[in-house]
Length: 570
Ligand SMILES: Cc1cc2nc3c(=O)[nH]c(=O)nc-3n(C[C@H](O)[C@H](O)[C@H](O)COP(=O)(O)OP(=O)(O)OC[C@H]3O[C@@H](n4cnc5c(N)ncnc54)[C@H](O)[C@@H]3O)c2cc1C
Ligand code: SF4
Image (cartoon, rainbow, N blue to C red):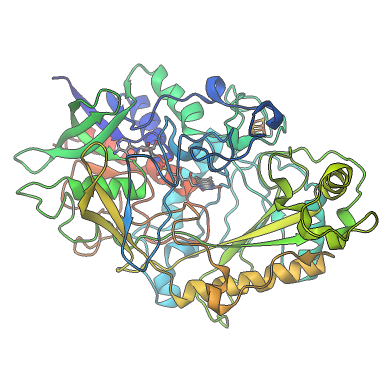
């Protein structure tokens, strides 16, 4: 059987970057991807009208984010369950497609700041990373140049500037929020998204169709499939196997990884690939699951798990949403609000040095709204604002039909603006995923059981977000549509997992008793085993994780190549 230099599991952000870096360095790589082949240029639904669908673009069971959303997968995948400990919840979004979740992600591309790597030193909670911002900065810089990101160098504390392409201007509704936020003492800067505003590396600039979540047919935004895998394939060093669900990492009698066994999801046949090194990039929880399922007499607690830390310290971002109705936007003259498929402005955490708050970690605010292409259910139910409009017969209450309904929709289109708080959750030992001993998936592979809950730190942080968002809405001349949440409804915090920023399940550290990986994302227990997704994160930061996954994966892959050349991995 052919032996590859490296077997990578997963083709999302982490796996794609590992494939590019390793193959360009000359390694013979096999990449196993559980999902089907999917190509943004060939399969994306860019420039499709919602009315071309019988459901008018409404979400379906298979496409919860809208019918044309570029994701095969979702909150539930038939035949691939997961469970939760009684009294807890966990929402787990998985993609089963080449490129993983990077086709329909939001492309908010934020660096962690220097303080994010040393939180314990600052507030005594959680842990410090074994690396610093300076260790990762050169890789962030190279990711910026390679993939392309727009933004503005604002010099905000702990929100490092990158190598930015010019940002698009704020749209009208974003200007409104910017002015209101600044009146409320909250700073607003240009957003930082991995979308090209100038051509880069043979990819054209964005033409502002605003449909990034459908996959970009001109490859003007970032997905692993459209930006990282093509150069990897061009080297001739990459063997790509789709529909390949990895079951476990195989080991030899020296206790080293020797390959991966997988199930062909179409034929249901079992196969094995042999490799000198294994890189797990199946996403934080799937990689933990693979390790926990790789049980042998030498590794009875799962592979690389002598510390019993695999699956622990799992975090997700906190989340809260607020929406305002802005009467000044009713009856607005039609105007161009085209732009990228995401926000043009961003509210970074502005109280980083304030120690008087009743919670320890910060959040940022994402802004949404505008006059994007309307689809089924847009506006969330016009009847809710009937009383706020003037003229016509408003006596009939909710719903309505005919000419007045159409008129109401036209008049109010774009007069709702929302804000989402996304904050840092503190990593705790007891928040974890582990193997459910009683449940297997359709391939006979034991599934994960989640046991995660928020602490007061996260709840009070989201209380603060809602208070701030209401203040900004009022200061911008709007009225909140939803009531201020209360302690009884946990200050409106989302369910754990719902923000889809799960990290920390195979954390790195200098002490093999309390971490799974060393500072190079190499398993303490198995020197030829690496993790290249968000599993190695020691803490979350309030920042969306993918830019850090990419930078870390590049760093890990280059270390791997050096060690392989030195003969240190066999
Ligand atoms: C709607 C949405 C919006 C988001 N917005 C943002 C954002 O704005 N900014 C940000 O930073 N992040 C965002 N994220 C999160 C971002 O998508 C993830 O952080 C990122 O994709 C993780 O990369 P990954 O390589 O770890 O995993 P993934 O992208 O999930 O890729 C993992 C791949 O591994 C495959 N796989 C899993 N198990 C196996 C197995 N056993 N065998 C073989 N293959 C396997 C999967 O099929 C998948 O293709 C968003 C996510 C979603 C869903
Ligand atoms: S908004 Fe730009 S990057 Fe996004 S799908 Fe359209 S052209 Fe592509």
